[in-house]
Image (cartoon, rainbow, N blue to C red):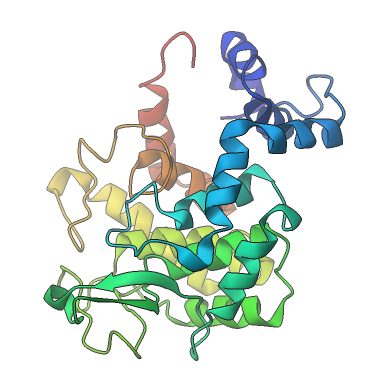
Length: 290
């Protein structure tokens, strides 16, 4: 949504919210339109917010994180890390977490999280530090948002993930060390929409990847999936149906808000008629407050 389209009631509501909401609203939506408080003061107020400080403490316990058993677990430190990185808390506030993340880099490049490897998908029903296509892009994305885009370790991770994009998008893949037999719940050869979405989100923060042919292929896969919505087509259980079209928070899963936000970062998508349909679907769900 562009600033001129933001209803006044919605803007007022955002600016009446807690510091972290005002901080992002002023920077992302209203900069140059509304006189902004001192940015440094507002950021300090954001960090002092009880909710934010609690999340920071939880993420900084990264080394002792619970195992990730499902990728749509909003309570897992991985998603909290991404939220804080996008909020703008900064690397300094998350120094313990960053140190732990960097210490768990796989030989291939992607950073690992503690996961439970189910026998149903080729694992051993035990916990390991490992990675999947549905979490590795997020870890690297958070590190880039925290200012580590030029760190060689982060570049190696992002480069590996970028190299996994095939002609029709991202396959369902995983750490070959602990998951050599990993097989997601889908047809071999199909792209995984969620992996495509997360990889594109990572690409949006790295200029050379954002402008790459791989990014174009991911955009096309996602918009192509949207165009198939009336057929009920699913890839790895991910469809574009009624549940997909419900606006949801937090923005962690394969749904319309996450989908629209990620694609909106790419010019090629913004000028595509299929993306206009996505936006129209979202706008139709708004009420008088936004």
